[in-house]
Image: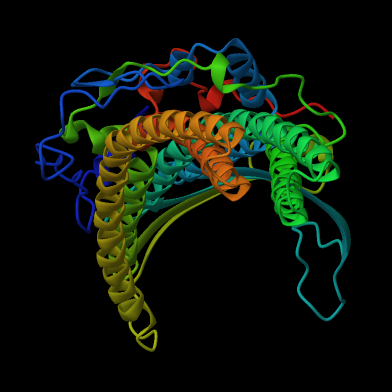
Length: 491
């Protein structure tokens, strides 16, 4: 306790700047122009109006707001088995142990030693022993202690820097977790969109095939020209050509989800996703702008890096100043092992020293200047991260509103295109239009269906992107993994 108290006393004054957390953002809004109270609504799947709720907190498991059991199950599996999570946890443990190791510099280092030797003195030399014997054994046991006094707080700043690195690694774990969950949701939405597009394309191909069969019979009866049949064949081939790219994208999305779950491609996940099984959150929590710097893991990492750089300046300055050490040693020596700890064989020594760097070729000076410049660099990087974070939220909010408008327009376009196609069919039956008019109506409808499906998927993706941009609600979790609870993976 005495040594610990002395260490704390000697390190109470530390050179270099004392770190101060950056001030909270004074922003009052994420966007320049006020956002509408609710997004546009439409009758399409995922067309519900969404209402922003400023000041409401994001739930820890924000993905459950989509009310999709397979999605919840897949994310739970990914959080347990994804190797990036395990890697981040191990890195946190490394950082924590390194910080604890550096704390040992506050205390003296004590070591014990024992030596035994067989010796023969040369005859011309004076005898070493009182007995005058030239051949003898020598046994020696001793304790030594060395203590570097942290007068300038250099060790304290080093511990401070490593503690800050531990904090950065803690939020790196949260960043990995947030990225993982967001990627699972994004790929699940992508899979659902692709399945809907493939299904719609299959229906289009079927309709085109049926139309081609009818036209070929009409051509055989001499009712239409071969040009109409050729045009339909081209339309069918064009529709069929859109399927392989969609199927490829679906396979890639499935592979991505399988990998996010920590599985190899051969062990594909069991879950499948459809747009119809996802529920769009209608009440969307929106954190206050002043809270964003507390909630975004990347901002907290940048803050911890700033703290590390600040402490490094103190370490560099301390290296310019005198270094004070105290050492002590004591023990016993004897020519017979049985007499090693008898009175008369004891010895001890106590020493102190100070070392002041006088000439290092400018090395220490320039290292100090480099540390200060690094602090300026990291401070600028922190500001950049904050600006980017606010930009992410603003982009997500704009997308939330714009894509709601887009879905409304896409649904209206699909309805209009469907009506136009039905009219074209009746006109063709009456002979008032050529087959080319029907073909144009079909293509317009096909494009409208695919555009509507993509717009539906965008609304789910936009909502997930907003939750990710706001930090993901990690601060509301009750299962935060502490470094002390870390367990290495089993062999």
